[in-house]
Image 1 (cartoon, rainbow, N blue to C red):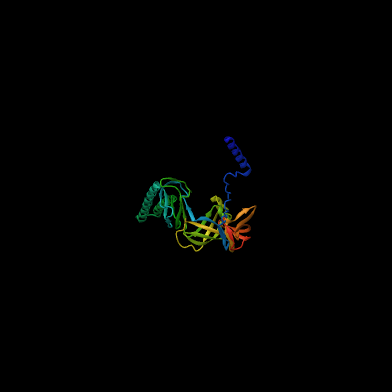
Image 2 (image 1 turned 90 degrees about the horizontal axis):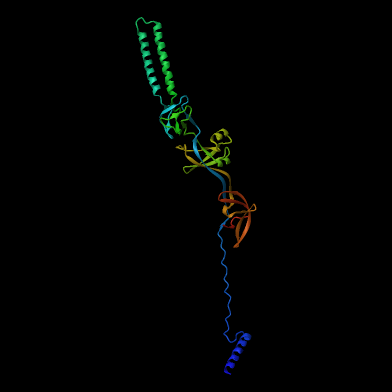
Length: 333
């Protein structure tokens, strides 16, 4: 009987649990929702649109060259080089011996001929002073002296053809890669002498296509700026351009002080367009889409896209013609 009673109580508890939601067990605590957290405020890095000056320019490099120079060579003779008395950068004076071919045999012939002239002169003097001298004997002595002198002059002219002398003062701006003892061809340029007082800056390369005759430029050399003017372009001197094999321009520099500028490098800036008191923004804040330019502006803390019209563009800046006002905040990407 006792076991039947226990079983009855167990069944009763089970049925009670089904219909009362486990009233016999402790009630579960209600699960609370997590507390709400406010999103962090969005911050932007911005810059202010300001009025300023924008310059569209192209900069290239050049070298000071002489506009007055002359090339020197052995015009009439080839031979082995025996003397080379200058190097690049040397100053030379008129009449200075610069280079010479091997002329040992010729110099010996000249010395012999000088003696022959001296002997002929002595013979002429003796003929004139001889007792019973006739006009014919004296004339024969004169003819012999003249013939010997003609021969000496011819040899000396030949010697001069195998030597190079400076016709004017200047600076050696070019020297062929030929050393003493090497063979030199006739009419092959060995030395170029330039006048250091007549200088221009020559620029070559693709950028010079923007330069036009008579345009003003800024020339910087040794940290100093000078005003320059375009005095020659490839279009004006196509033969020189063809010889160089590349486009070029030449710049005349104004008020250049005295100094050793020949061969120095210079920076040349051509200002294509310049505007003052216009709205200028950094180039990196402007984006392009479907052929239109736009910036992101910050209005009352809200980011907005703004279409703009642009003008001059440089590597770092862009002129804004419309769509933006001075003082507005622009979001930097």
